[in-house]
Structure formats: structure tokens, C-alpha cells
Length: 121
Image 1 (tube, rainbow, N blue to C red):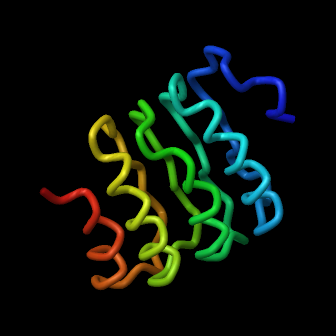
Image 2: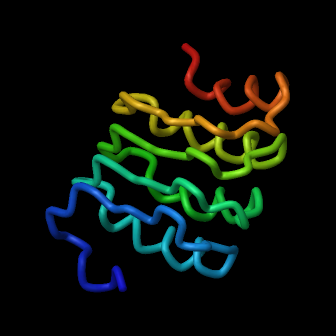
């Protein structure tokens, strides 16, 4: 699906409610790395089946890019997922302007802390 887009000028991708899992996230994450120079908005909302390692694989290659907005709304995030995502956010904080975490009602205070830890400093 994303194979021929590397080197293009694609700025926005919407994977909202796509029932992403480990295999899909790994495949997509590998292709997103080729798009990071232009990708500004990534909508991952309502993907509730992804594990912490799936989130890590999805976001792995985006560091050093120009991503300004990520949507994790309604993704059923928990401590492990928040920790995995938080570790990747550190590499994105230079350009990140909007982070939507709404409707992740199962996150504890330590999960919120882990999620936002990489954005500090």
C-alpha cells in the first residue's frame, strides 16, 4: 500500500479505526520511515488491538522527521503502550505541535507520566 510513496510529498496519513495489529504495524512502520521528511500528520485513532511492541514498531522510523501532529484518540492505551509510545515521542519532540490522547480512559497517572516523559526538556 505505501510501497511507492517513498520520496513523495505525502503530508498526512489516516489509519483511524483500521484494526491495526503487530504484523500490520511492523509493515506500515517500515514504510513510514521513507515518508518522514514530508509527513506532518499521522492519525492512528481507534486502533485498540495494538500491543506495546506494535506501537513501537509503528513509530520506530519517524525520528528526525517533520511530524507535527499525532492522534492516539481512543486507542485503549495502558501502561505498557504508553511507555512504548513515550520512548518514541522523544525523537519527535522537535517538531511535534499536537498530540491527541483523548478517550484513553484506562491510563493511570504513571502511564500518563511515561507517555509524556519523552516530551520534557
